Length: 109
Image 1 (cartoon, rainbow, N blue to C red):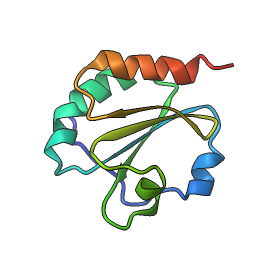
Image 2: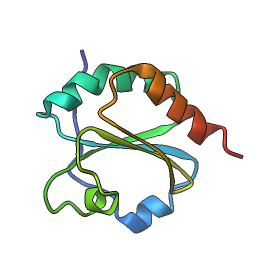
Image 3: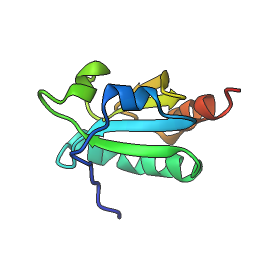
């Protein structure tokens, strides 16, 4: 099983808004039990969409990006297309809901 690693460095809100194409931002923490439980579902769905950029952000009190997206629970997946939120999943418990959201950000023309 792969190690669940979230990066401490986070892009600014302005940088996120300038992203192009499909991007998933995953907010959580490596020690979070809910994040560990969802990891398999997230990895399985993401592996079917290798062209989608996936950024894991270590969220926490006072972290500006998580607050900008009003993240309350981990993991929270924000599905972006060209810097705009298209879908959001909080604490996913299956691969299908993640795959459906990925399809939404890939198929927008």
